[in-house]
Image 1: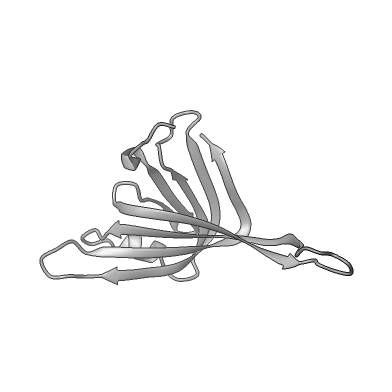
Image 2 (image 1 turned 180 degrees about the vertical axis):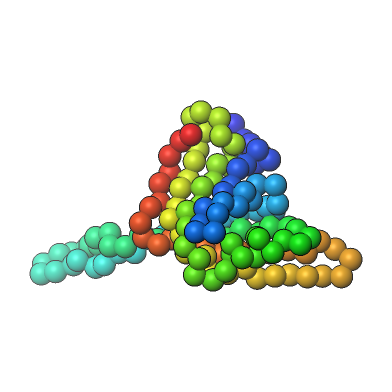
Amino acid sequence: MTRFVANQAVMTWIWSGGTVTLDGDYRKYDITPSGKSATSTAGHDTREQRVATIADVKVAIQLVAQAGGTADLAAFLANAVGTLICGPEGTVAGKPKTTISAICQGAVQHYAYATESLLDVAFDGDGVTYVQGNY
């Protein structure tokens, strides 16, 4: 498989207050899907058996804070509900596209002397949409 650098990535947060394009400001983002299972072992079973129950997804994004970036901070208020769209290889036809209905958990604001200020934004999937597709 060919390696790639995500320097063409596109990332958008669409919420009730508008659309925020994140791809010019991000340092990294992590999409972490998870699943849970329940034990279904019974009777004379000789091995542990499980059934899939609940799936979830979490997203963490690190952004370089923008001067006067009040619109970004407003978009990342805790409990803001919207849709994240991430394309690590840009929007070329056939390239991966992830769409996640999400609830923002807020932005941790890092302000440091004589260096870039950063925002760490966390999202939890809201259980409606988590699609790994293509453009």
